[in-house]
Amino acid sequence: MKRTETKTTTSSSNTNKASTNAVNKSANAALAAAAEAQEPTKAELEAEFDPNDKELCDAARKIQATFRGHLTRKLVKDDDDAIPEDVDIQEITKKVAEELDIDLSDPELNKAATKIQASFRGHKIRKDITPVE
Image (cartoon, one colour):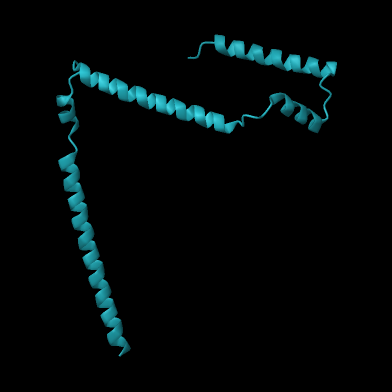
């Protein structure tokens, strides 16, 4: 009796797979037909577009400007979210100095900072002046 049950299960499993494959094929064919019917070709779009149509160009310009504004506002919002508003830079500097236990009034430290800044400024000027080939 177990053999009969196994055969029945196997045959019903094969039937389910076959029907699933048939459904998938017909669904894919229907989607492809719908996509072909809805999407115009590039040539058709170019034939419809008239660069002298002021109304169409104004509409495109408005859409582009609106999207650019949206993108800029989104980027500014993301930048604002990155830095908390109540953070004071001087407080952070003092905390870091205390953690590192560095005497910021040390003349040697000021000389070292000046040297580093001068070196970087020279590097930046040379980089900006040198033509890139």
